[in-house]
Image 1 (cartoon, rainbow, N blue to C red):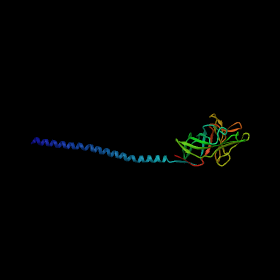
Image 2: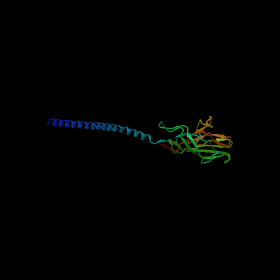
Image 3: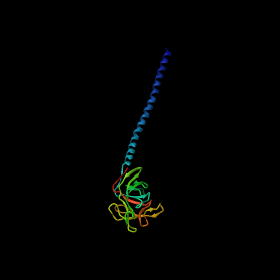
Image 4: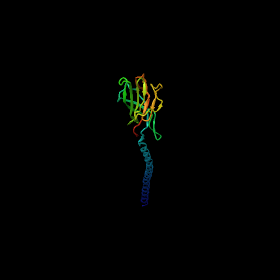
Length: 227
């Protein structure tokens, strides 16, 4: 009887010990779950804030009408060798800022069209060259634009006149420009009320030639939204 009682006592003790061991993993699991939930809930506000900042950064920025785009030609354009409708490319020379932030960086790609090209050989006594910009590429995204024209004409024996495509205003202040393959030859660029007017280089007294690297200034005729 005594041995039986001892056996029963040992069995009860083992059951109690087993029950105690089974509770510990549950408590540990419960603690881990609570910590995870806490970390999860604390990360939510941070994620929301980050998302809000990204949303604000993705908002479009408007470049206002009248903003000047100063560009540098990538190739030579002339009244003799080009025709109306020909395309040309250029790069932005001066960054455009809105509210203290750069919206159109220096080096952005630009495309344009020869709106008018008349050689002295075709129209007696005068030569005309008029250019406009069509698009600018910012962060691999192409934006269509409308600008005033850069125009230059020659009448008679080398008599030069300058007009603005945006209303025929007189030429404005003279800006320095570089041309001639980056060798530092001075080529003027005029800016006024309606557009930039290229001073340009000439082949004798015959035709208007704007060498590669000539700087020209155009004005936006409509606001531009950049995302």
